[in-house]
Figure 1 (cartoon, rainbow, N blue to C red):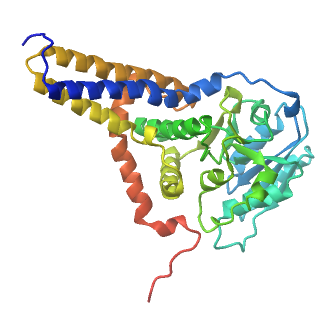
Figure 2 (tube, rainbow, N blue to C red):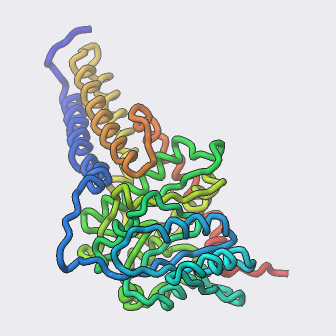
Figure 3 (spheres, helix red, strand yellow):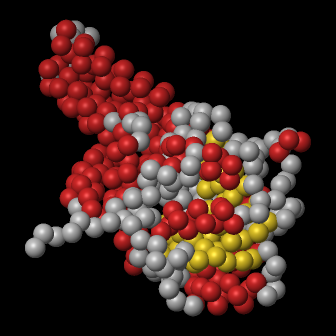
Length: 389
């Protein structure tokens, strides 16, 4: 074993390729992964044209009266400088949610309720609920929440309404209220990866999705694009297929300030994660590809394979082995530190030392859910295929 600078052409090609992959991670990949952290730190500069305007908040509720009451308490405590109304769209057959709204509306004139007709079938009830809420809205800008949401600040409304001429994409985090139901480290990293991907796309003027648990847009934009027409037969799609339809490079903004953050409280965090993951895998087939983020695990595996091959070809020359190790460490340190900052911003924190191992096994995790999404396609539609007798 020795150190020298005599290399074969194959070793030079492999080492050069590894260097290029390192530069790729240090530039293109790092730029995208850093988007959430940079977005949250960016100061907002208001303009006279974006003065505070009246808004409507539409809350979708379904058999979750306890959480609905907690959310309404958060909403009614908002420190907003313009009038706002809250419309609860009740999609449950019971009276619990109705009782909550009726009781609170006696003290708050800006709170009211509408219902999803029980006879509505063969179409997405949530999309119908959102449509009914927008039709009932008095004000031209609407924010959407689910009853399971909790707001971490009385400034949520102000943060989400900083520009009521644009589609506003906020962040929502699955937050278990039972410690034993917390997301696994791999689920947490995948949730952060999903958010990083669509946030980076929006920040680079290619928006394509958001989260239906924290989003806002002008009612005129909704109706100008015929609402959910074309996807009412799908149970999901209100936060990806629809957002992809209404967003443009100039009409979309991302809001990641601390005040804008929303928790999705649930006692079944992993089950909710799985449901959302499978659903988005199915609807996501119609969305644009994002090769930089989608191929990141492949780039990491390829870098390791190239490094091993170059070291083996140059052995016993340790110069190549040392250079390979330095390049791989540079990749991992740059990516892990950037990822950790953004994951903390998104409130899906991933430990600095666990980022790379989790990214390496992420493709198998995604494959599992991709197969699950395709195994029973009928579950994603509002109709069910009739069995032949």
